[in-house]
Amino acid sequence: MDSEIVNNAADLRYETHVEGHTAFAAYKLHGEVITFTHTIVPEELGGRGIASRLIKFALDDVRAQGLKVIAQCPFVAAYIEKHPDYRDLLV
Image 1 (cartoon, rainbow, N blue to C red):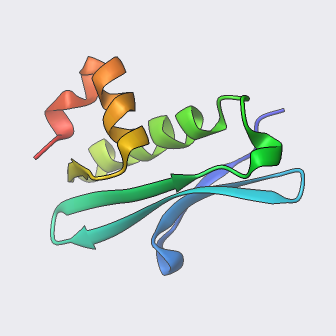
Image 2: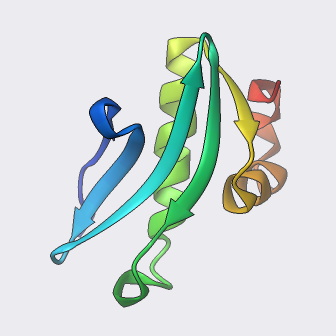
């Protein structure tokens, strides 16, 4: 069962809640550039593709907003490397 992913702008992170745990991709926003700083998936949720779903959602949302991306987070950088259709978002 997929849980809803939301942009929690108050906490500067995209997040989802699964089985009482929160997975998130944290960011900083400077003008029209979003810097993803780190992605956290609790150990209990590991191996389910939750981080990938989070980042796909976040990057699609970023594209819809017309923002550019700095992939400081190694997971986000690796995701974009594996999915070249997102490379145009990079600064």
